[in-house]
Image (cartoon, rainbow, N blue to C red; front, side, top):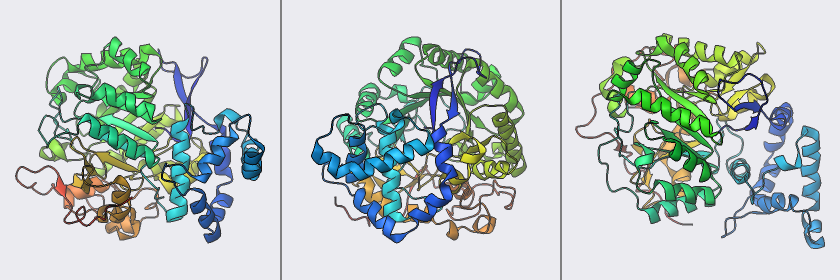
Length: 516
């Protein structure tokens, strides 16, 4: 999900060969950010927070006064009682809309195809009302939930953080998955990313996808690409998937196949991405796990991504977790990571939409803002200079625990895909309670608790270091990120407990209080 950006058809323009869309900034985003200082000052007032809390308080049905007010703005024929009830707010929305140059259609609509954006707006507002402005911002629920639907996979990738193919308890049934979707929708989670294992192998993949879109989520699917036939691509589009991302780790078929476990996978993955691009109805991305093995190929992989027509190039910064714990030597050194970020920044200047899981990408974008160049923030995607400072301060850097959560196939909840600490299970716990009461999440949100240079860094609010990498190398969530140039070089990861790939935080889940 790219916050503040939408996919628009661009006639001509700087497009990859065969591509039909590119990401462009929304005028409303940049202009609202131009008013950011006034907006921040306003939202910092206790009286305004109280009003926001009242407006975003949910009923038993899950709606709230602010949601009803915004929804009524889009209704052409209102009764006189509703006009009296919501008239002042409608005038406020109209003033903001005209000031930012936004169209009426850009206002989130709970009944239309912008339901995810509507949900995200309520989520952000409720978070500000409940938690106040914080850096990083804590929302009322995750903005993005990555859901590993299954442990099943047809590949044996050396670096797999999930250790896919290894059983990990009974996976959620279809009825349990639908219950989870209902709970996520009730809590105004706007975006879902389905992954695995290989999500296309999940037995309930298609019904879960249909149910997710019926509830208005922005749905993405990340896949190894080997099962993406033309028919599958068409079905993904028909069921309402917004974005499909295919993992390809090398411009060389041989090297990709060696990394992924068997000859022929590169050809299948490339063909799968081509099929998705050719369908024309889906947002597309190429995801690449960057390691010391393929860093020298990064420019070639990016050019391949452009040539295939992928709309986004997504860099996954390798973390030695899952099966990757056995090969920590392929992790980038801090110097190599800095080199990678430089390559990505150069591609942004060239107009490519780039995402990266390396939290240093956010403050790197902020620093480039002072040079007036094209920028990036995490998880916001590419942005122009006037739009960057606020996203970096509130959304940038490591999203674990403040904007992102991960669901495992058996219902376990972890702070992110690369951080193997189980904070609870959705068979026993409500996500609302986990989000508010987990000791692990509280620690991840507290950038003042960080040690080493991460604790004193000028960019700790917009970066925070990779908490998964710190944990993988030191066993300590608050330790300095050894992958950053400003911290000490990493030591080898500690030995993992025999037979264990995921750990439960002691007593954290058991201490949660259940309730509505």
